[in-house]
Length: 420
Image 1 (cartoon, helix red, strand yellow):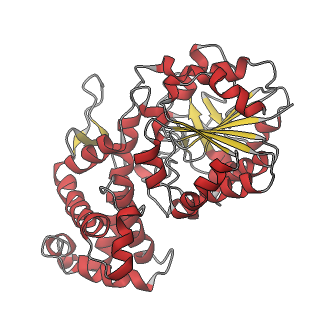
Image 2 (image 1 turned 90 degrees about the horizontal axis):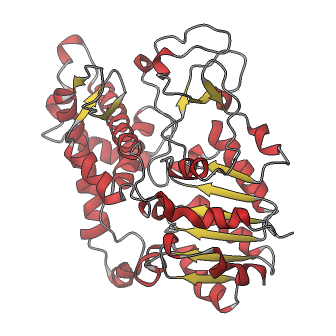
């Protein structure tokens, strides 16, 4: 029987009422209602919470200074930059011309952080580092502890760390909301109910949990790589995807807002220390597998395992839980005959490379792309490698365009093409 998979981008979540990229970007830049609960742990204020979070005024001012500089650099490149000759003529048709978003800003800050911390040496970034160090708004921040012998560059590393944590916290806070139009995901249920489909794989690039909520609401059992609860925590183990009885498998290739990265216990690899707390369990009060309380976790400043940014994600695709997931993604695609792409703009070079390699490796493979704005959206914003092949794939009958939102497409609209 033919094996089918779904690849879901941000449009899938937006269709059920989750925040858009623009919504998240505005929240990140505004800083409204942002609070800090400890080192590296930012989020949005919850008026119903019993906690008394620290309002992050002084910290937020520092963070917004670096955010503003990064945004200005992105704005110049993506919307205002002056390129000479033919490249300038082509610019209107290129992916890089768009409104700056939080992913662009995070990528710039992450490059600064990686270079300053000698994680990834990048001589070309040194000029930007010096520009930031000499910026009039940054100098007071870097010199605030000079009388204590603090090196300004070390202070800048700390500022980059703090800003990355801030962006991650705000993004997760925005995406922890509950979807309000979840019935719009009925296409997945229809595919799962088709007796001709032995298994359905769902690969999501989204951090929110709307897919999981939908599957539970309609009674679809699924495997997500996390096992049975141990002291209230479901830990990741890639072997769960070897369960041959599972008819629906969900892989979240960019992480999830309900994941928590717990400290290593000395008995499990890094990826297996990522877990999903159950029943509203506070990760800061969690008990480990041996029955001992984890050391004060959020004071360690370890971020939640979600991937944010643009090209920096490629580095993470080979590490920890994401290394596991992308290995499974690549392996399973080799045994997949049909792919349905929902709400994905083809802006991720790593995912695009997998897609193009998959569809070119067999004349029988086909994909359907569902998007409500194909002509003015995806077909213009897709990165070059996909955009270059797009029309040829359509003419060859290997790519079906569905100019609609996922809520407007039924399984019957796709079955004939996918079975042909």
